[in-house]
Amino acid sequence: MLLHLAYFPNIAHFASMVQSDAINFEVCDTYTKQTYRNRACIYGANGKLQLNIPVNHSQKERQLYKDVRIANDTKWQSQHLKSLQSAYRTSPFYEYYEDELSPLFETKAEFLMDFNFKCLNVIADCLQLDLNYTLTETFKKDSIDMLDYRSLIHCKKEVSQNLQSYTQVFSDKHGFIDNLSILDLLFNEGPNALNYLEQQHIVN
Image (cartoon, rainbow, N blue to C red):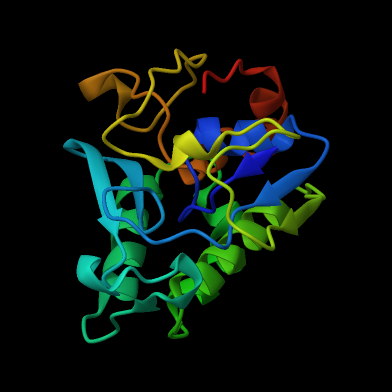
């Protein structure tokens, strides 16, 4: 399966990884805005909350995703951590995974893709999941020899997934919010998250 790498991927993105025998991550693509490469959505007290990683990027330069640097002139890491703490400190499993996730927000990262791989590997460890993945060597617009799920990276063209509902911290206020970051599922479902991901039908 061919996939883009996202910042704490949403549930559909992660479910597609879990259900695939082999993952090939696209690392030779040009960086574009309005994608989940540098953003993740969580469930805050006021509903859906978007966490954005600031990057040094200009559309005119056509940078490769792997060359995009994080703009560390703001305290975005501490802001993201505070948002997660505020949103999930009352969830059943936040404290269970807190020690594994906190270091990601305490050390500055230089490149966006490298940081996203770190996040992915930590989540895989939390899920006790052995992800089998390789990296692309060249960019191909169309994939002939494997399933192409790269479209899951887009925010604006997102397809409704109709995922099974599970209990969320603020669901009594705003109802179930579909397809949030894998963090939402992890903090609310804990060890059961992997079983949940295996059961979802993902629409590309």
